[in-house]
Amino acid sequence: MIPVNEPWLTDDDRSNVMDCVSTGWISSTGRYIDQFEREWAGYCGMRHGITVSNGTTALQVAVDALRLGPGDEVILPSFTIISCALAVVRAGATPVVVDCDPETYCMDLGQTAAAITPRTKAIMPVHMYGHPVDMDSIMELADKHGLAIIEDAAQAHGCEYASRRDGKNSWRRCGGFGTLSVFSFYANKLITTGEGGMVLTSDDDLAVRCRSLRNLCFTPRRFQHEELGYNYRLTNIQAAMGAAQVRRMDQILARKRRMGALYNELLADLPLLRLPVARDWARINYWMYAIMLDEKSGMDAFALAASLKAKGVETRPFFSGMHQQPVFHRLGLFRDVKLPITERLYRQGLYLPSGLALTEEQIRAVAVGVHEVLA
Image (cartoon, rainbow, N blue to C red; front, side, top):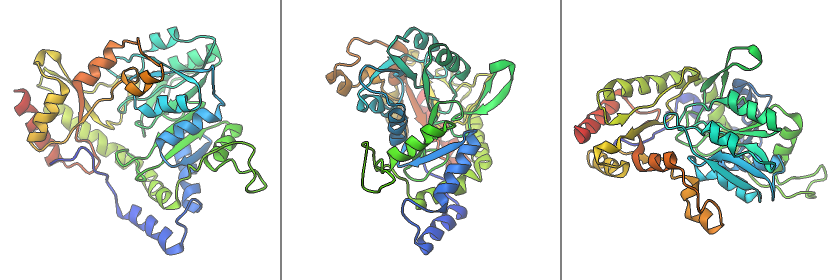
């Protein structure tokens, strides 16, 4: 079975981890924590990095850092992982979901603008499957209405967006736009620490608040607390892996883009498939090689996945929209919401093996399998 993901780990990762073990710095303090936070924040163009235990907790810290709560609304795409809406709901605020662009799969900007009310306090753009959101438009909305931006860059390591703000044309890395930005370092991400995440910000006060929230909100007098926080700390061992990988991000990105280009070449002759797109203002990272099956095929993504599995190819389905989640319906959310593009993506979309350890031979074998199923 060709796995949907397998991480690419090197001697540098192993050396850093063994350094932690040999020196005893294995918990949530140590030089690799500081190095990872500093270098990843700098890579993304932010002043502060705050490591946390995973991408979901990064979102929670970001939402709580903004002191969002009952009566507040956060606009986000329905087409995303549940962690995004979960963080808003856990804070007592209300998630407001919008549909997505049918080609980039990122949030629909027209619907986002229309969803803003006096209760809206933040927008949560999610860079989907390694394609950036049109961040200039999001930032213009935020500026106009006085909103915070919680930028979910969990899938967008190294992606770049051609910003045109203030009359300047400049490529900026995803994760560098938000009031607060969040990353995941799960095993299927371009940088992985197994589990892990990070919150980025250039706001000094928000950085202090995030560090407090991730560490039980200790006051200077230890074991006294003015506020409820979390134990969301990352370990030095995990940070050691991340620090090693930041140093080779150029290699990682080049490897992913070669993989995406090869898939594009091998699958270009299949008219029933929509392959990943890249807007001219986006430099994508092919985090996952996401394909959409035309409904004219008479087959949905689940049938395609079953056929590919029989040929030894593992796949993963697209996200089911937040407005389709039974748990949110039971909470009284999204019951009458219909978002046709998100719903179609769930029916017809999946992603192919995309891990960094994938070989050219395996990619060619996957493409053969797809051709055999759709021929």
